[in-house]
Image (cartoon, rainbow, N blue to C red; front, side, top):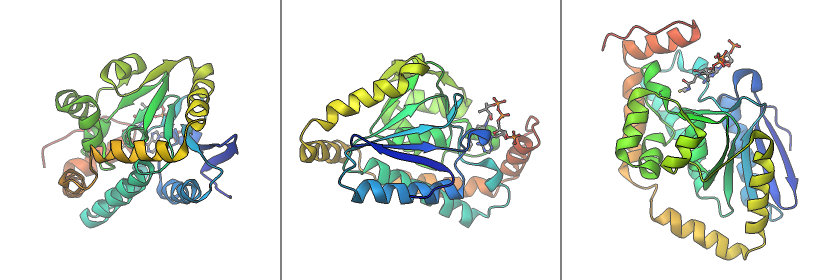
Length: 259
Ligand code: COA
């Protein structure tokens, strides 16, 4: 399959999806989403694929968020549609009938943390960094992060991370239950591959049923996702969002006024 923002390969039943925009720290733009959806079509339809690893290209970043340069001129309605598109793509990952594991090899910020959280579980390298820094831009997480972070680590810690925009390291992410294991950067892929090779030796229908049943404990049909998309749209109408996005693109500190 031909992609320009992803690298994909299938080896021994494991399908590797590598987000490949290393010069932009693998930020998720429109094209990445379009290609990710095509790669997910393959995951759902190709019987040779037994499990999936999602990672980022280069040594520095898994995914450093949604591509902020696409946030400059969006209307509220377009912003809601953008959030819903991201949510839908990540629901497809979460509901895949095959294990999808994030191998987090560096920054997993904003949409990158949300992508990792939509995977069934996460393995991190020691240099991984996690965070939801959207408030720095006058924004909020819009691809399911307000829901999945709260479910994974509890409301208090989730709100602390979202409200402070703090980045946490791999050790703290493990302590919080955000990642299952931490490895050296060199061993990240081997460690993840070994876990999936073990899982691939089990009964595929039983694996699919485990995922379906575990997902049913946290239904994606709750109103939280809709609230998140609407609030994501609401902040797009603010002066602070314009200031926050402009400040990032101009590489300066934002000056928020509460308007
Ligand atoms: N969207 C668009 N471009 C991004 C990006 C994003 N989310 N994250 C990084 N980039 C770009 C930078 O603009 C820069 O591009 P340039 O070389 O053309 O100027 C390039 O990726 C490298 O990033 P840089 O900031 O120079 O690297 P750094 O090591 O100094 O800092 C981060 C790394 C992750 C701390 C910093 O890039 C950052 O804060 N990114 C945004 C994180 C974020 O807010 N994500 C949530 C978005 S909703």
